Length: 486
Ligand code: RAM
Image: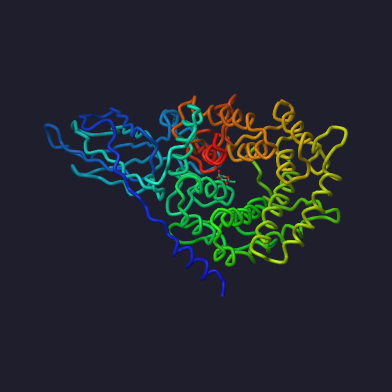
C-alpha cells in the first residue's frame, strides 16, 4: 500500500551520497589578545562545520577564553550588527556563537554554517593566545566531477553559470534545501527549480526522487493540498503551510522528472497524489472556472509587497494541467483527454473573465484591478494568449514602471521561461544578464533569495540581514544557458 511509511522508505532508499572537502582559510596562525578581531576568508561560499585550535603564547591563559564567532555569506553580513535585528523571522537564523573555552584545545563547533567569511572576536582572554589550525569541512551531495562547463562563448553568461551551479551545489545536501543559511528545509517551489537545473548539471537523480517521496509522505490540509515544506532533520516532519501554487508545482516536478528520466516507476507511485492535487484545486474554482479566494496563506507566486496573486495562481493551474495532460498522454493514461479538455475550457474562461480587452492586459476584479507582471507571465505560461499579442504584452509590462515587477529570482525564472516560450531569446538573455548579472556586480559568490537592483536593502522579511544569499530558486540561469545553448 502506498502510504506514508511506503513513501518514507522510498525516500530513504534514495538518500544521496555526501561529498566532503576541507577548506583552509587564508590565515594559518595568529596571536591575539582581548578586543582583537580576525577575519577568515574561505575564498568561496561553503556549507559545513568549522574547527580551529588555540594555545597559550608565553603564559598559561589563567582564566577561560571567550570568543564571539560570526559567519557571513558576504562581507555586508559580517559588518551588520546582529544585535540591532528585531524583525519577525527569528534572530537565531543569524549565525553567531559566543563560546567559552576552559583550556587550550582543538574545537569543532557542533552546528552547521553557510558562509564565506568567519569573524572571530576575542571577547576576553587574560593572556595573549594563538589561534591556528582553522578548517571548514564543507559538504554537498553534488558530485562536482560530473559537472561539465557550460558551452557558451559569452563571458558574462559563463560567469553567471558558474555562480548558479555553485548556488545549486551548496543547496544540495541530504535533500534540496531552499537556503543552507535559512530556512534549511525542503520547499516545493524551490525543489521544482533545483530539480530542473540538476538535470542539466549534476544529474543527481537520487536527491530528486528522495524529495518527491518526502512530499508524498506529507500531511494534506483540509483543501487536500500537500504541505509546501518538509523538515527532514533530525526526523521527518510535515510542514504546516499548504500553498496552492506549490501544491501544483509538485505535480509539475513529477512531470519534469518523467520528461527527463522516463522512469514510470516513480510516476506510478505518485500519480494518484498528482491527480488529487489537481482535484483539490478544481474544487476552489467558481461556476465560471475561475479560482476563488481561500483563507490563510493560499497563494505565494512571489515576495513582491502588496501583490495580488490570484490571476497568476490561475495561470499556475493551467501550466500544471498542460504538463500533466502531456504526462498522462505519454504514459498512456486514458484520463489525459479529460485534463486537456478541462485545460481548454479554463483557458477560454481566463480570456473571458480575466483579460481586459481595452487595456490589452490581464487586469481584473479578481486582483483588484492591479497591473502586475506576475499575472501576465503566468497567463502566458498557461497558454491563454500567445504569439504577437503575448509578446507585446510581456514587453510592455516589463518596461512599465507602474506594473508591479518581480522581486525574487524565483519569479524572474518564470519571466525568463515566458520569454523563451515566446521565442524572445535575446530579451531572455538580456533579462538574465540584468538580474543575475546584477548580483555578480555586487560580488555574489552565490545567487540571492531576493534582489531589486535599485534597492539593495530589500528584504521580504523587513531586514536584509536575515535574507539568504545562497538560495536554491536562484540557480536556474544554468538551466537556461545549458538547455538553450546560450
Ligand atoms: C521562504 C523561502 C523559500 C520559499 C518560501 C515561499 O521561506 O525563501 O525558499 O519557497 O519562502
